[in-house]
Image (cartoon, rainbow, N blue to C red; front, side, top):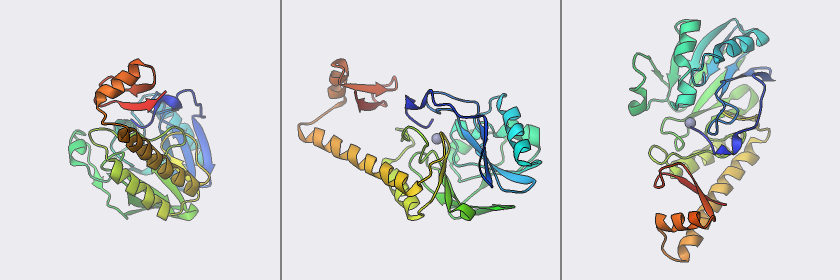
Length: 267
Ligand SMILES: [Zn+2]
């Protein structure tokens, strides 16, 4: 799960080449939460490349991945790297392994979630870990908040950033109620800003050309939301009953059926 339903309707090509060392194959999993679907990235310039986030595991994805490999002259996958363990990122690992043989699969550990991936061997990737392939160097940046195991990756050769679900090409990132952490998320955004990325390659939606401006916009947006909530509470104590009242009046709306876990926004 990634972003608010505003992303539905955006279309992107199944296969696209975004730079000399970055090609994208769409995960074939469009939805209100994934927008056009997960961007799965082939990274590098050689005959063997890194696959970052193999999508959700839909059968229609494998031919798209193969078309992307052919288009850029990638004859085999070197290894799989994950930004985090949400299903639209890790779900495709098994079918890619079945098709492309045993490969190293690495991610930042999240024991509660990783233990649900029975039989899948996951190599731990730490903050600052470097993964290399011909023409590309990825450096992991631990960025929890959207998920407790989230890594972004700096692409050193381009001074670019693979942002996973921390920054999106469209919509805004969801901070899940149970495993998310808004404070950690804001610190992660500040950490990414300190990297001064030029371009951002998000997990959903098109590439973002001015990474620094987009990160500043995300940080400002979260601070503005906080200010609005505090201003609302200053007018009197609020409970979820207030939100339900406002919902009945058509002034706010909730995303999610569980009213306690829902995200609320002004109409
Ligand atoms: Zn996610």
